[in-house]
Length: 271
Image (cartoon, rainbow, N blue to C red; front, side):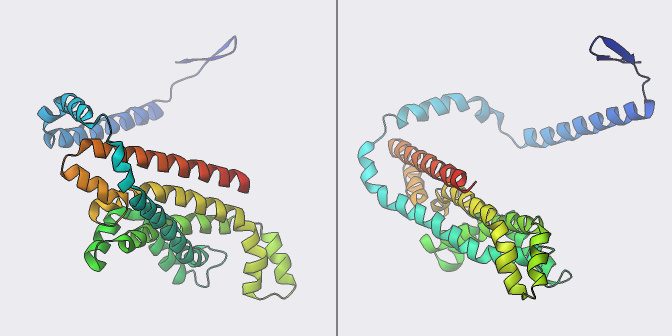
């Protein structure tokens, strides 16, 4: 029987054998799953390269320093393109995600049997595929460039915007909606005056937050030909120009830090 201390008082409790067996069984299953997964990873890993990784990393680090600062003059335009990809992609996602959110919310959807499942399918499907995969597909369809990157960011962000927004719609204060309905207002008027004012803080916050995320994601879309600074990163990696890679990574880090600062300031102002 275990002893449970409560201050100075010790309380004796009898062990529940069934409960203890369940706990041990859960631990056993968890450890077995972990060992099985580790065996698969281990068999597919070339451990020689893993053990040699510190030496390779030190060698690349030595070649990458000092950075080639004069390369900065060639990076301003692709960095601007990257910011535009993130901004326009976020804007398109908001335009497409807001209607999906109203269709997915239980209290605003016109049809719970047909339209709501369809809206939820859009949310899940757009969120389940990474923006890099979307960019790869779109580059194959419409060709390389900024437009493909913008669409990739937009499609990836629809599910994020719609999911958080429809959850905010479902959590509104229904008394305000009922008060507006009592005046004989139409459905559009109820949405405009009873729902939208309540979800505007959440809508503004998630929009800025998604823009911040998209700044990070758009920096690597150029790796698959979707434009932006990632395209220059890929070309520098291909020719092993490590000092240029260092400059690009520093620039990406600064851009992400600035976007994080802007995002936090806007969210604080909203809250």
